[in-house]
Every structure is written in C-alpha cells, then in structure tokens.
Image 1 (cartoon, rainbow, N blue to C red):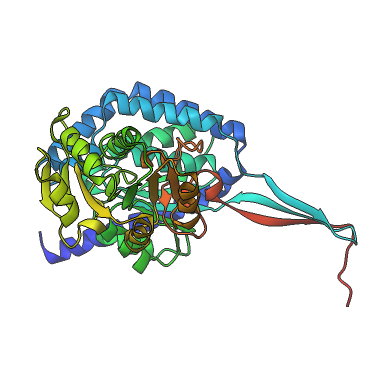
Image 2 (cartoon, rainbow, N blue to C red; image 1 turned 90 degrees about the vertical axis):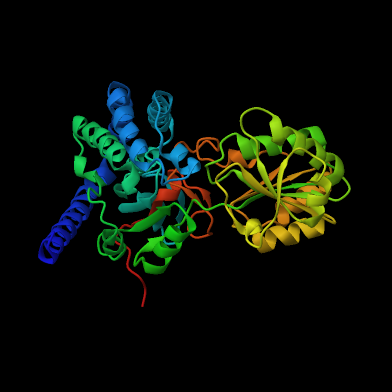
Length: 435
C-alpha cells in the first residue's frame, strides 16, 4: 500500500470518528429527556436481543479469541472470552439495571430563601461519556447500558482484540434504542482499530464531557496525560490483604483464597499479602500447601526474605520477590507475600505501595479493624472480607462504568449517580436582587 493510500485511510477514519462523536452529541439531549419507562424498556429489549443473538455473539468472540491466542496472556484471554453463560449474565445485568432507581431528575436538596425564592439542586446527565478500554467485550454492554440508564450518550473504543465481539454487542444496544423510539446514535462504537484515533478522541473536548479509561497502567497514564476533557480513571488495582496477629486463620485462608483465585483477571483480585510475624509460620505453611496442590489453580508466590524462609519447606511454588513485585497488579495466579512486624508496618506498606483501589485486614481485634478503616486511603476498605466484592453489582449499583481510584468526582464503583451532575433550579415570583 502506498503512503498516499495510507494517508487517505487515516483521513477517512478520522472523519468517520468525528462524525460518530458528533452523532452521539446530537443524540444526547433526546436520551437526557427520555422517561424512565423508555430507558427501562431499552434494557429489557437489549436483554432479549442478547439471548436471541447469543450464538452469534459467542461465535464472533471465538474468532477474536483464536486470533488473540498466542500473543495475549492467559489472564487477558480470560477477560476476552465470552461463553453462553457470560452472555446470559450480561442479559441479566440489563434486567437488573432496569430495576434500579433512575437518578435523572432527582432533587438532591431544596431550600426557600427569606424572600421566597425557591432553590433546588436537580440531577442531570453529564452528556457524552467516552471510554477507551481493553480486551473485555462485556464492558461494551456495561458502559453503554449504564450510560443509557443515566441519560448519557456514549462513545466506546474497545481493543482491536475484541472488535468482532464489540461490534455485535454495540448493535444490540443500538437496536434496542431504535426499537423503543430513542436515537440509536446515542451508542457509538468506534469502528476503526487504528490506534492513532485514540489520540484524536482524547482531543475532542468540544463534544465529550467525560473520559473513562479502563485497562492497564500504560493506557490509563496515556489518557490522563493526553485527555483534554475530564477523566475518571478506573481499573488498576494493587490490592492488599493484611493478616493480623489476631486473625482467625481459617477465616484468613478462606478470604485470601477467594480474593486471589475466585477470578484472577479482575482489578479487585488480591495482589499482595502482608502477614504479621506472630502468625506467619502457621499461616504461610497452610497457605503454601493449599496453593501448591489444591485443585487445578496453584499460585506462584513472590516472597520477601522472611516469607521465603518460612515457605522453604513447603511444596508451594515460591520465588524471591523482585524489586517491582510489591507494586504489580498481577492479573494472574501470582501473588506477592511479605512478613511484617506489626500493624503499623502493614499500614505503612499499604500507604506506600497501594493504588487506592481495595484493601483488606483480617483480624478479630475490633480496635484494629476500626483503625484500618479509618487510616487506609482507598476507594474500598474491608475488615474480614474478600476484596473481590468491590464491584458495582455487589454494592447494589447495578452495572458499573469502572472503579475509580481517584477522588474527584467519583470514588470506587461508578454507578448511575456517579454519571450525573446537577443543575440549580430557581423559581421566583418576579424576584429581583436589591442594589
């Protein structure tokens, strides 16, 4: 292909992208004014279409997986894969979203001034929300649907590895909108897989109100660096669990096992264990046996010197921790483990190495539990529970756009309310402001 042909393709893709985002902006008012009944009808129609087209979706996804196999990790392939059960889960999530209260139009607070002026704050959609994400085609449904229910148009740019799956899933939502007399253009999937277009998308602050990146640290760093609109970043989580001297060790083993092995490729999976020196010999011995041979999912442990010594005689797969292992989101059957002197050391470690996502302590010491909840600076902080609960559905929010590890304007799972702003509504009776 000649240089001129490549340039023409780039121009065409850029023009198409601009047209798509402009179409989303043009459609957003109609979605913002849509009734709750209309939006819920879209959810039910979308669920029915997912079930009806499940075979086609799974077949297209199998092509994506086959093409990606060999150059993506097992964890990324797991994120990419769609099965009939996962498609059914997507359909059920749309039905669950229809049951949730619509935040648009909600009065947050109201007051009447001494002069009789009535002032309210009322929830309104943000407008157009764009998301750049990797691998997980379910995100196309999750983000598109929650944006729709909160009255926002969406522009979705998934990874090239999931392009076939994403195209069919986006069409499901577009067809569901059209079937309920709402503009299909309120859902836009960027059709080109040209990576250069991500930079162009990040420059469209005249059309896009919020950018939500979901993926690895490199993607999120790029979006934060280049985006010209507001960004709420979600996805990267270096999640710790601290096993205290006062921990019930059977509970600790069960919680840690769930936090690591339930599903390894999600951002709320355990990455780092910190174990109080008083219980480390017994806990690590039992954990080493469990993770060495219990079922088909052994876990590789990256251990500091003290933990390595305690695990030396176990059958666990143990390696010395490298300089980056306590700052890594593994997304695989790998975990870092360190032995600490006390709770102070654990809290200091989390403060230094945490990503602000999800942190947990296992302890029967109520005072320590309260201290952990108070002092740990993260979106979700747990006492005696698995970090894998950090999820919009588990928190009662329905589907989520992502999990924000920042503090403005949303933190933790971003549900419907996190995708709204508000406006001041003022009612008077000929009121004028005195000079």
